[in-house]
Length: 443
Image 1 (spheres, rainbow, N blue to C red):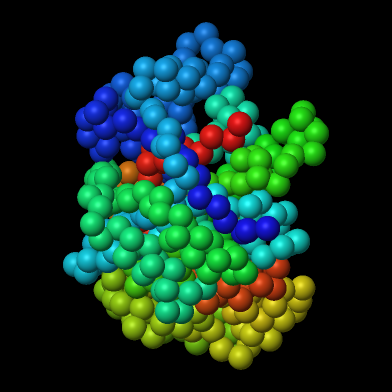
Image 2 (cartoon, rainbow, N blue to C red):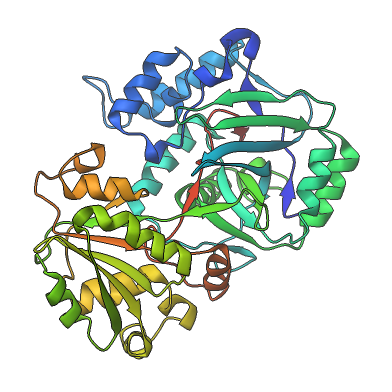
């Protein structure tokens, strides 16, 4: 059986909606109420009304899901959404800028055959939460379609598959959109049966690592099981056996992983001397002069060294950054604290930070959920009580900040193949995939 298959997507009719930029949205789980409101106002047919329909006054518990389904039905009947005539692979490029450098991440959207995690060659890398899966399952049941794609990575050292697909698009004008962060998104449907067959063949035996969308993947599996209970055993090619997926080669030059730093509340307030004393024997600690603003210096040193064992800790008690480098003592300690985990997992920066430093050495286990930020300036703003990231569930000031190295794709692959899952927010794959480019009907 093929691992992947083309599909005839339901897509926005640009003759009807005008600009695609007006009707797309980022994934539901990164949309705050303010952005949700902006997207509602941007266009009457913005995809926000499907992926994150807001609760209205007087709503019953699940009414927002039924309202999302009504929008799908209405937009199909009015021609706002139209289904492609032929099954396609959808080449999808994202052009973005980081630190003044322009990148282009290239992939393609397909249907991927669902396999239970741990039983086939599809691997998760992060834990999931039941509440999010219940929410997404209710939406899938109501709309009977995949409303957002998951993000899958596959090994292709020569980038042969995307090169083949790109070649098939050379004479085709792309469908384009620009998101609220300025990222340019381009889409090309590829319906050539010869190209589709070749891509399907090249992908057939490749493993896939779920980069983003773990909840949506598990939701797709749960939905398939519900349809199977309703209809009996499903034929192999039934659409509920598949999930809409963006597939990107792990060697693509645009495949960037950004860091996710931590701002914590509810810990003890430490001085740099106290941090150095607590970490003695496991980390070699260096005091970095310059107060809170030295965060960029600390991060620059960490990036240059490119070492998972480096962690930057801000001691708010004496306004000092401490650059901590794991030594042999840390490795020995992790062998005890995380005895059931692989060496790859034990040596990961986020594992060292949470399991060894925060929980064990700083004795701050059970602290409230951290605030996660991706930019060093956001760390500084947060510690000063400024910026949008500081506007979280609590008005309490942060008591600790941590700069941590991002996991690399090689870590994702190795740890996934051990059938382990990384700590939360180990990776941040930028940019996010758009919702609203394609929908995948499941009935």
